[in-house]
Length: 188
Length: 188
DNA sequence: GGAAGTAACCTACTCCGAGTAAGGTAGGGC
DNA sequence: GCCCTACCTTACTCGGAGTAGGTTACTTCC
Image (cartoon, rainbow over all chains, first blue to last red; front, side):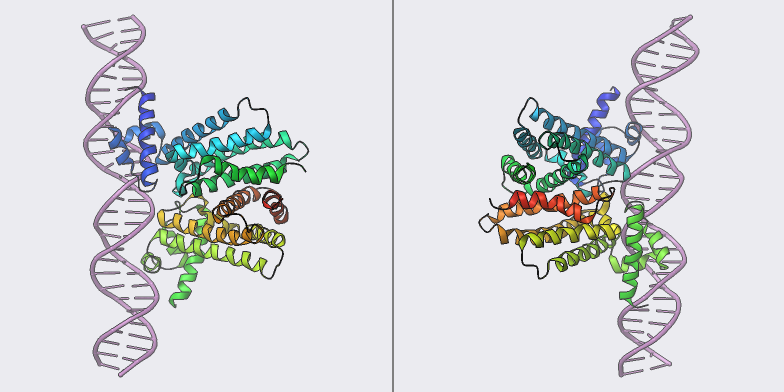
């Protein structure tokens, strides 16, 4: 079996087991067995247990970002773009709970590399927000926009965790964040 | 040495090493050595490595909550109470970076117990926010207030992480959150 | 066809650190 | 003096991350 395919297979299985039982309680032996391969193969391809987790996180975050970006493409109004981006985020959470757990690493993270990977993902999300905010807040300094962008990223992450336990639609969740961000930020 | 004092000593050392090197890269042997005691003593008092971490998290969160509550005591205006609570939060972060790392567990968390402990701390913080919001938004249903409370908790957590790398004062950070929350939520 | 190289894969380990079994010592109550 | 309890130790087990050193099988070049 060619390497690329094996890697994808390993990622799929790892994502499943990590999300199901958590990083700590997953052994490399188990992943290897479920893939139908021996442990050193995984080490050959991903370097370490943490490396494997990092690859899973990266893949999941990439999917989320792609969904967000696709949702705002071609939209002119800033308000509408913001609303669509937020809705896409919560819809993603809804249909990809497993990926969401991984992106957050469900607080069962491995080490510095994994922390950095998650932080890098947040930075991408923050950057999108900064761009968006600057379109309707041209006079606000970038450092302040960054603060707002961080706030929104944090707000969404937390609300997402709350959200999965409630009977709330993606639209409603998005509207809640919208209310704060749009009413709170738009110039008077 | 009496148990209570030993426990406090162990917590102090553990907090220091966990915050410094992360949960994963800290060994119980090392903590025991630095305390000047043998490993089974720590197991006798805290049950497990995760139990020790949970105790550290709980202590740090209790300190933060106490500071928050003290800051709003006796304040009448909702706006002022909110501002003071937020400022107290960021001031705490400023002067207790080590505790903050632990409260977040710096993404190097141990297992389900630790996750639950962190979540429980957030719930306390959320409850405070719900009470506060209901004072100036009496007509909004509780479930919606909860959503806003979660949003604010998430926003503060994220902004705190951003905050420690920047040259921003606690007051400014609080003002940024204030702008969104107050302008975003107050009834028109 | 055979030599040489390489990519995919394996068995059989090492080693570190969490957690434990079994016991030692010191001081207070009677 | 004796027992009981609380504090503390040495000396282990055991599971899982990571590795050394191979084997197999397919391609490539002569």
